[in-house]
Length: 158
Image (cartoon, rainbow, N blue to C red; front, side):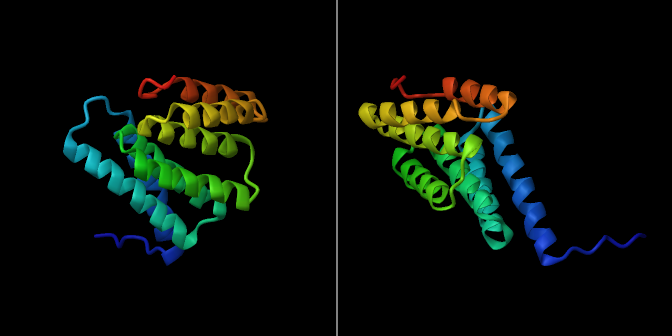
């Protein structure tokens, strides 16, 4: 019987943060989620963000807030989606996070407002997202961003 390798606390938190982030994406990509799946998806997003909060950089926190907001928006829960979208945008501005992540910070604000049925604010942040997307340095990242921006449920706001 072999002994399992030991991890430091930092290694553990990083592994959990990454694994839970990826698991959340598995739920997001699932087309036939049940109510239990939706609960699990939300819990994995929060858990990933928590583990990043212990050992991560500001960018990890920003992305964690983005993920939680995205999950709430997909679930049609606009108020908590907006709370986490605003946290994401605040971190983006406070930490001077740019490029790909700045564009997604505006995107998540737009989706949160879409889930709330606020067409004016959705449009405002959608336009800011589109503009920020044009500043993404890598062409493949820019293409991915615009594909994501054009997809998903916009609750009749787009």
